[in-house]
Image 1: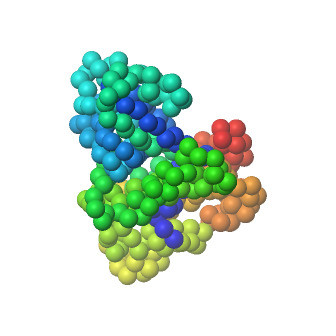
Image 2: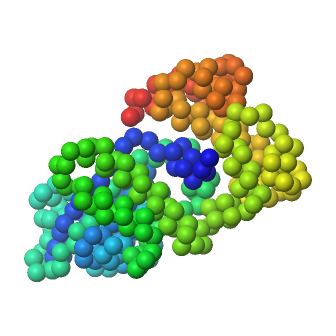
Image 3: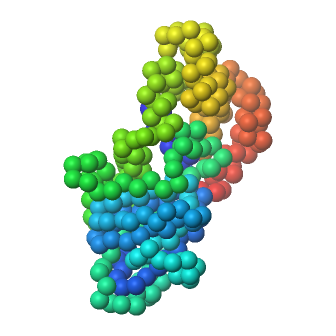
Length: 308
């Protein structure tokens, strides 16, 4: 069991996408708000990220990575542009001759090469720990820091823009790794907010491990408290304070969230999914699912297939 992996898998839908972009001179490109998470990795040169909503500009140098986990709209520019320049920023277009390359006004300017991409996320089922991620996660390139992230960046940069055999499999897999490594690196940099608080607390983390390892088990507060090695009141107090809901309420939420993931990503029969998430009959599962999602499992699966 891995709560971080489960939290990511519960919301990630479809295939991630990315482009390798090179531009020089004076330029300013807009990225609209997105129902997912966006990222940029600077391979060469430097630029600035200006988030919508008045956030502080972020200076990005070679090797820096930045994740926008809530799909915040933003501008990437060659300099910390003023409000008027930001307002004139053109939508991002990675096509040759598109706005990024076409807006270059000074060919003598230093070249900037970036990886730009995004992940599709289901915002209706965001794990409470994912909500704690800041609007902009900036991971500067420092000597000796986050070697796994650096390796993923290097591998991904080598794959994009090439026609190597197997690239259609390699690139999505590397993008998935990149997301995990960016979140892991942010947690390691600290403070990691709720992520670090929950996973660093022996009681809450033990309870989460138990629930995620076997969500179908007939858990009770007493049994879960014994698993965590504390009294029931202690478990209830610490778990609720850190996770945001009582243990059994979280279990119900996670069972149905996990079920939604199985409905979306597999063709398993309804009865099989019901058993895997702790419901004795498809009827009981359907009733609980409808109460949580406002639709039946069958309609949810059909809608997810149509949207993919």
